[in-house]
Length: 441
Image (cartoon, rainbow, N blue to C red; front, side, top):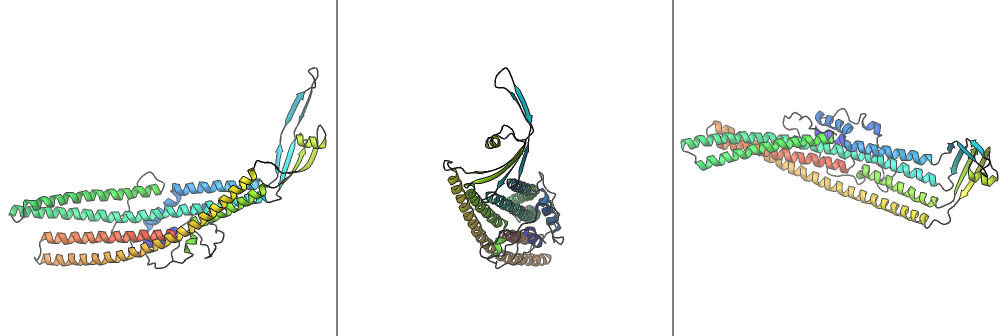
């Protein structure tokens, strides 16, 4: 049933194991595995399982997150390239003279190589920052996936509830028609007043309008599910046989470290690591740089000047450079990196605090929903029993058709109230799972 599907829907993010200061985020499933086989084959609700599988592949939010992950991986490759040797090949030619009466020409194909010796680990810190950004982007994919799949589950529960609302509205419309017919007959017989007939017809009109609203609600749910699946059309309506919303597991406590499994927390932690690496990179960037340069057939003017020659067959050189006056740019970069690191730390602390508070609120909401569901179940039982008793009394001639129709309408209303309570509890259970990073307690 739905509750087992919901538990599997969100369990995608590895949990951290420290209850105090969290460890570095554990990598989430790779982008390729997200679309491969993310679901358990033993889901109890095949309709929901199919919707989740389609959302996994078609959701635009998930695809956007995957695109950002690809960009982060490209940035990692770019950062690594800065620490590798560089080789440039070219061709150059020139013609000229000391005066206009004579000229000389020359051509060459220089090959230049360069390599920066990472004395103060500037390049290393840049690579660490890029890798941390990649880890954050990977967790963003997991977060987007959880949010989309949770919304699919919520909307699916809402669709099942609205299908029940539509069935109940159709029943009430049918009962309103029966009541109108009975009162019309009584009016003809003189045992009912015209005002009662007018009131019955008004009730019938309202009941028909409620059927239309219920149908539109079902269509809206189907459209929302289509959009979540990356489609521009309504999904096919699943068959409805009643009692499609199961009771969810009872949850009374949650572990204090449970929220650390949330991908948004792990992403915030990775961004904190990236900010720390950029702060170290800014410090290293303010220090001297040492580069090695080599050339074959080089026309590099710096090498020609150093060796005091007009042309070179080959050369190897090393250089140490440091900018003495930069107008305060290095100091500003360090201040900016320190502020970025402080901001990342505050964002991480805020994310953890809000996650824990949200989990507690969702747990309380789930417990309240469970209580409301129990009350609605008792009311439904009483209404169904009253209708059953009314049927027997009607068969015995103790009550008329109007009284029996009223009892049946009361049972239908109680059934709708129970469905609403079950839907609220199922959706609150999804919210709690989402607050806990997809891990049920």
